[in-house]
Image (cartoon, rainbow, N blue to C red; front, side, top):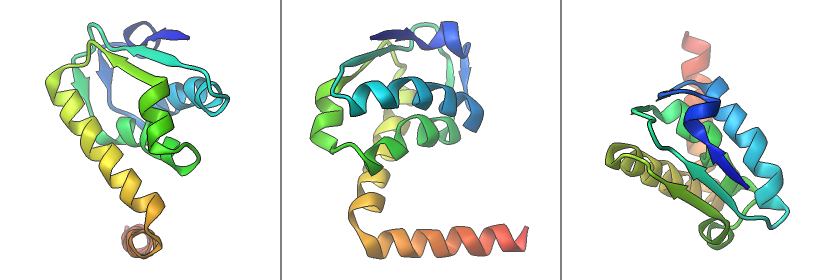
Length: 115
C-alpha cells in the first residue's frame, strides 16, 4: 500500500486528528503483515502530536523490527525524520518499560487535572 500524505493531509502534519487518519489507514495493514509506503513529498511541517498518533502508538502492538521491515517512509524532510526518530525511541521505551509507562502516565494525569 502506498499513501501520499500530502494528498490525504496537506502540507502541515501537526494535529492529533491528522495523525489518527494516518494511523487508521496503516495500522490494519501493518498488523496484518502488509508493507506500507508513506510518501511525504510536499509536506513541509511536522509536529509531535501528529507523529505520536500516527506512529508512536504502533509500537503498542507491532514489534520494532516488524515496523522497520514493513513501514517505508519516503520524501520526509530531515526535520520530520529527526522528530520521527525521537517519537519512535520514546515509544519503544514507553511500551517496553512498565516503570517508564507508569511515570509518564502519572505525569500526564497530573497535567490533565491541573488544566
